[in-house]
Structure formats: C-alpha cells, structure tokens
Length: 320
Ligand code: DP6
Image 1 (tube, rainbow, N blue to C red):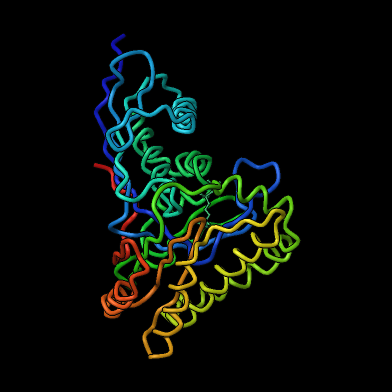
Image 2: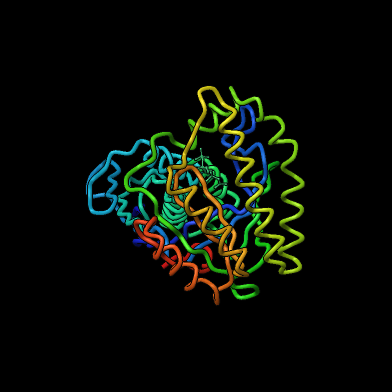
C-alpha cells in the first residue's frame, strides 16, 4: 500500500482582543474557561504558519526564522496526530506579525494557525469541533481567532460563534505598544494564581454573565458607547481581581495609566474612544474607523507610546 502524499498547508490567523475578558479556568477541565468572553479579531496583527513534511523522523518548529524547541507546539502536534489517527512528523514554519508573548495575544493567533494548519495538512477534513477542542488546549482564548469580526466563546462547552461579521459593523482598534519584550508572568500562571489567592475571584466569576449580556445587546444594536463602556468595566474588573491576589499581579506599567488618562480626555472632548488592557501593559483603544487617526495622533503627540498602530476587524482563519 502506498503512503499518503501530504501537500504543504499555509494558514493565517488574526490576533483577537477580548472586549469581555476571559480570566480563570474551570476546575479539572481541559483548559475550559470559568467565564465566557467576547472578542474582536484583528486584520493586520496575525500569525502565518506553514506545515510540510518533516525531513526526518521528528517534528521541527521555526518561529520568526529561529529553530525553537517549544514543548507546547510539539504537544499540540501530538494531539492533532492522535485525533486524526495519522502518525506523520511535521515541519512547522511560523511567523508572528505581532510582538511574541508581550500581552498582545500572539499565543492565541499562534495556536489557531498551528492547529488549523496541522489538521488540514493531515486530514483535509472540515471537522471544526476537533480543531476548536485542540486549539483551546494551546490557549484558552485561541478558538476566538478561528472566526472573524466579533466572536463569543461560550464557557460551558467552549463553543464559538460569530456575533457580527467584519463588514456588518466595522470597528477599529488603536494599539499603543508600551513596552518591549516578553511579559513576566504568563496568562496561565497568572490565572491560576488569581483563582487560588484573590479575594475578588468569586465575585468576578459571578458578575461576569451581566457584562456578556450587555455586550451582546450593544453589538446587536451597534451601540458603540454601550459596548465601550462595558468593555472598560470588564477590563478593570479583571485587573482588580488580579490586584486582589497575594502577591498582587500587575501587568501595567506607568505608561498604561497615562494612556487611560488620555482616553478620558479624548472622550471629554467628544471623541468616541474606549480602552482595554490584557496580560501586558499595552492599551488597545476601541473606536470607529473615522476617529482612529485622531486617536493615534493624540497618543503619538503625548510621547508615551513606543509604537502606535491602527488595526481593523479581520476575518477568521484563512487556509491557503
Ligand atoms: C487577559 O488565552 O493566553 O488576554 O488559556 O492560559 O493560554 P491560556 O490563557 P490566554 O489568556 C487570555 C487572557 C486575556 C483575556 C482574554 O483574551 O480574554
């Protein structure tokens, strides 16, 4: 019997930024979140991953041109092989068009691109439940990068659904990069620490469904003020929850507060701008495309940001 021939597969997956945050995992589940979340998939920050047949008997992984032995990547490839029932070593070449591990969600786009590419490479079958399940193990927020526009991830079964496609309600995000290099505490470790020690953790989980409902309603009505307001609130509650841990967990730096203050000033002058931060100091500002250039200009004029970019809503994973 002849062995199957494998064609190289290339996949692009956009970074996603949570509007309503996921922070904390369900007990004893395979990386299922303790809370649901809603995100926006970006167009210009993304990971591109190409998979082809390995030149030898083992897997190879290259990230941004550097051969890397990242156990998380090899574990995900093992899971894809097991579920696909095909034992084929792979060569993975990945490029992150986003700063790696800095709190700009490169692990989410990375897992989404890697698992989709490996699955399509081995099977060419469109079994998305399998893909979602494996992607989630790479990163809890990663399944959201499989879809474009505004996306909800359900906490119970980890399912994803698109709440609004990019063309229905185009929004922008101004990304202010406020540090260089990788973050000190991974999200995974930070979440476990928060759940184990924060006196605010239970309150965070209990109050969360209300924020999801407010955001869904805002998206349905295309009400940016309501969406921005609930996004800021979800952001601050997540960070408050981390501050309640022992020792406290702080992902911000001094520049983060300066940008928040600037957003408040912009809003007072009538510009529709709302901020959000994740497991890193950077601030992402949600706005209408027409306001994005003025917001970027204001941030650059303040001299706080190392690099400021404007991004818009992107599509889900694209297989080439
Ligand atoms: C603050 O998905 O990176 O960005 O599941 O442990 O891989 P793991 O965590 P990850 O956490 C993302 C946390 C967040 C909020 C969010 O994106 O919802």
